[in-house]
Each structure stands twice: as structure tokens, then as C-alpha cells.
Image (cartoon, rainbow, N blue to C red; front, side, top):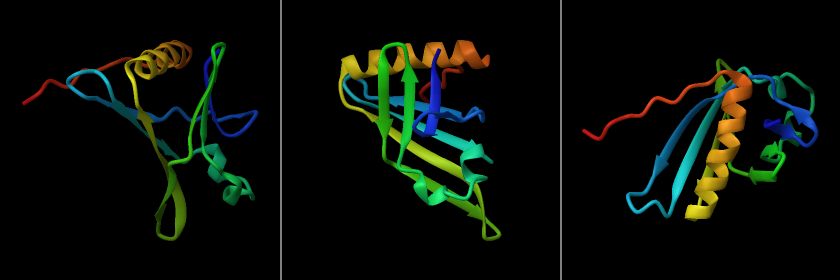
Amino acid sequence: MATMQFYPGVDEPVVPTIKLTRSKDGSKGTASFVFENPKALTGENVDGISGLYMVDEEGEMSTKDVNARFVNGQPFALEVLYIIRSPEGWDRFIRFMERYSEKNGLGLTKKEDS
């Protein structure tokens, strides 16, 4: 079972919008996540968010690059950047995303180069 967590052991129920980029040689990439109105922002210990943890049967991947977006002074979204630094890292991330997508009914839309 693949899940995303802002607090270790606490699954985030909000499914993010996800955008992937990959270098032409396939050696590096990025994953950008936007969680609108995530449950993690409704608790009192919002300051306790130390990263995004992606957990599945293979283990855990994480990033500390998490930023809150505010609208009218209220927390609205969490924006996360995950940097993929190798072809093996890319393959591992894709395996996680396939599991997460299957669990949450997500699909992939490929954007063609213009």
C-alpha cells in the first residue's frame, strides 16, 4: 500500500496534483506536488511538518522541500518538490507512483513538447 505522509505514521487523505519532469537523458527529474486543503494543515501542530514521506512496501522516500501557500492569511495548500537524482531513483519513484495511482484512481496525462 502506497501512502503519502506529512507526519510520520499519519496518512494524508488529500490526493495531490502531481507534475513530473525528466531530463532528456533520463538521469534526473523532479516531481511537484500540490495538496489543496490537506488534512495536515488542519491540525494545531502545522509547524511540526518536517517533510513529505512517501511510503510503500519497498520502504520510504522523502523530501524536506515543503512550502505552505496562504490565501487571505489562511493556509490553503502545501507545495512539495521531490528531486530525483538518478535513473534508479526515477525507476523507484515511478514504482511508488504506480502503486499510489492505483490506490487513488489516478491517471497519467503526457504533455508533448511544443
